[in-house]
Structure formats: structure tokens, C-alpha cells
Amino acid sequence: MDAVDEIIDGWQRVMPSEDVEPMGVFSRISRLAQRFDALRRNALAAHGLQLGDFDVLSAIRRCPDGALTAGQLAKENLVTSGTMTNRIDRLVARGLVARSTDVADARIVRVQLRPEGRRIVDAAFVELLRIEHELLGSIRDADRQPLVDRLRELLARIEA
Picture 1 (cartoon, rainbow, N blue to C red):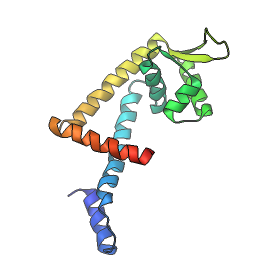
Picture 2: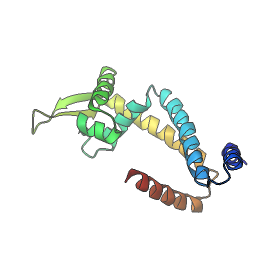
Picture 3: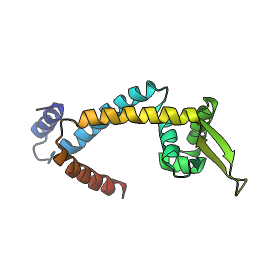
């Protein structure tokens, strides 16, 4: 029995006419997200990054041509253009990214990784993977893909 089971039992006791079964899934997802977010923040801080910094650097790192516009970065990171501008400014000041004018259209400014940005995002990514592998270590390999599939279905339904 875990803390979520205790919460569910409490609600079931005071509101026996309600079906509290979904809490078993969503309360655990919420608690996992909170705990994992804290682990991620600590791991990224060890590399001098905030979560938003890592999101920007990793989006650029995954991009096939190695550069994205601020608008593309904002859309991918689900933040406003103002928030993205602040993040990019901070990363430019640290020498992790650079802005450049698009050769095909001078009105477009693209953001690309500088060598230090690539080094830091790669090291942080490897550390995050290590943590994720460690956390999943108690789940058998055969059980991981069905878990991924169910979570994908749930996320698709929520995002629809």
C-alpha cells in the first residue's frame, strides 16, 4: 500500500457513492511527474542548466539542420515568444547558442548551438538517460512497452 492507496481509501470512506478508481492512475502519474521533475532539475543544475535552457538546447540538438527560429522553439517548448526570447538571450549571453540571419531570407533569425552548448546538452542528456534507466530498472523489459503504449494512448486522448 502506498500514499495514493491511503488517499483513495480516505475518499472512498467519505464518499462511498463515487468511483475513485481513476485516482489510482492520475494521482500516481502526478506524483511521478513531480518527483521526476525534481530529479531532472537537480541533474540539469549539475550542468549549469535550468529545465527551460535544456529544452531549448535539446530542441536545437535534435533538429536535422542544427538551427531553429525562435518561433519554432517557442512552439516546440509550449511557451510564449517572450519567454523564448528571454531563454535565448540567456543562452546567447552564456555562449551556448548563437543567432544568425537566414541566408535565404534575411528577415529570419535562426538559433544554433555553439560548441559549448552542444557539449553541455549532450552531457546533460546522457545524465538524464542514466537516471531514467535507473528508475525503470525495477520494471521488467517485457512490461515497459505495454506501459509506454498505454501512456501514449492516455496522452493522445488528453491532448486531443
